[in-house]
Length: 316
Image (cartoon, rainbow, N blue to C red; front, side):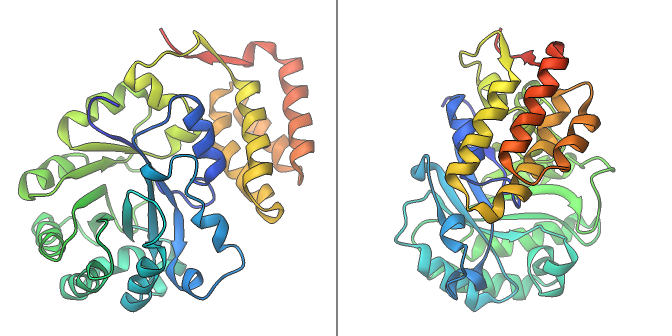
């Protein structure tokens, strides 16, 4: 693809193969990040880890994202995954969910420059592949600290930083502080990826002017064709939303274990339903169902009763 890279963000219960297949069907993106993978569960042989490790449909563009509060577990997880085809490994330093913070993982790594630097040095020794991190501003709006933190990671072998420009426990209701992304880019030798609050293909292109790559999450779920729109790739004039939803359900059944179907479908439709005028109504109907067949029936009935909701603008 031409232009600055466009990346699919790592999202729990969302960035799995079914969504990646859907995006690939519209022309794909430059890189697909995995769901957040627990390093501890991976190296201990957790029951579902093979599903998290699935690197299809484009393994050469796939990035494994790992989370743990333990440096040795992260290093061992990278060693375990090293034989698998991928574009690189990413360490989660941005998740602010309380269970992750309590274990010392995610954004908690940002509380100590030395601890984080030592961890990266240990992980770096285990792989020749690209090593990156995804992080937030920190626990306060302290740009000097953010720069010092990132420069230490850079010195220890990190080759790319993705910044979600909010502080650790800040929610999505407050807008992302994109000025931090541009300022950080000027301070580092390595590329800086921008992420946060991107709501359209046009905004993907506009935001890319201030960083080295763009990562999108929720927009890619709502509009799996957003990457193609941003690139100006051929698309139908109108996107058939019923067909897109049906394809997702088919791929979910094919690419994920039965135990994951309900949670993954609900997470997908939380964002995908934003395409509809009656978004909350459809989410409520889908949320009452436990099986994929029942969800398909709900969608078919909705589009039958509301044919004007079936299509969304696609290409020019």
